[in-house]
Amino acid sequence: MQADLQCPMCTSRSIENYFLGKHYYPKKNFNYQYVKCKHCSVAFVSPMPDEEILSEIYQQDHYYDVYRKEEDEKKAHSFQLRKDLEKLTEVFKLFSAEKGFKTFLDFGCGDGKFLAFARGFGLDVMGYEPIPLNAKQTSARIGEKVLSGSLSSLIETQKTFDFILLADVIEHLTNPKQVLEQLKKMLTPQGFFIFIVPLEAQINLGQAMIFLSRKMKRNIIQAPPYHVFLFSDHSLTNVLKIFHFQQIMQLSYSTDWPFIDNRGQSLIKRMIFQMLGRSNVIIGDHFFGRLLNLPNRTIVVAR
Ligand SMILES: [Zn+2]
Image (cartoon, rainbow, N blue to C red; front, side):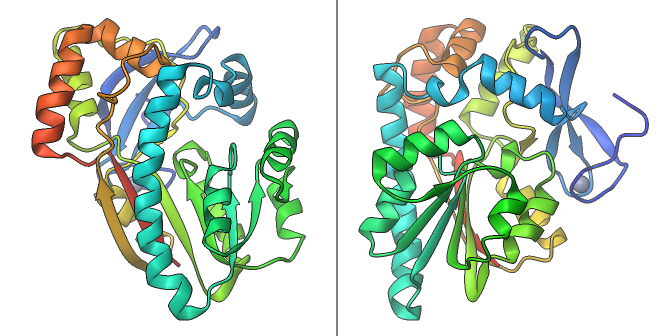
């Protein structure tokens, strides 16, 4: 761990090693690890990859295809999506009708699943996806406007929105504070952000299994650091406070990660199966995950 390491969220220099251990950047001859801020308790990758490395990682691994290629992964994703949409429905029901909310931006809209859903709720929707090709494909698929390009080009449209959704986005951002400050300019006066975030830094089944594997001294996982931040619901609340957000509601929930109804060969599962053995994962997930109902995702409404 570097001695001068500073938390990108709260700027504290009180940093400790985090239990995920060593990983490798793909095709790069150096290591990274996750560390944790003792002050705000957010975990992050060290060293923080630059944009060049990240775009290489995403292109090498065809990140956007990883979740669509295989039938099993589709099932898993649709299960997770179902749970996400349940929670999103609760949020929409609470806020949209009552306050006349009308406009919706999905920042990092991916294949447009949330855009289509929000449209079904009667909202005027727009997507943003940084990679032009992905934006174009999504736009063609769902027939809605999807902008691409830099964040500043998005701000320059001077559009405002009642809801800005960041689903599976904030943990990928190397500079979340700047991005959120910019995006705040696009909120209507009564509007707010909806964050959907995987909880990867608190006790849940996935973390327990990774911890166990480390105890078994098999702590080297060869996977790229897609998620440069790892949140717990506690650290996410802290971070929003640090960014001067007012948290309006939070619902944490379980998607039975790593997906009992899906025993396929996803990247993450291959990794876990390799570490712990397939049967342990399935048995562990089935009994403990369901028994304890440990949340591995959260939805937060804030402004
Ligand atoms: Zn911190």
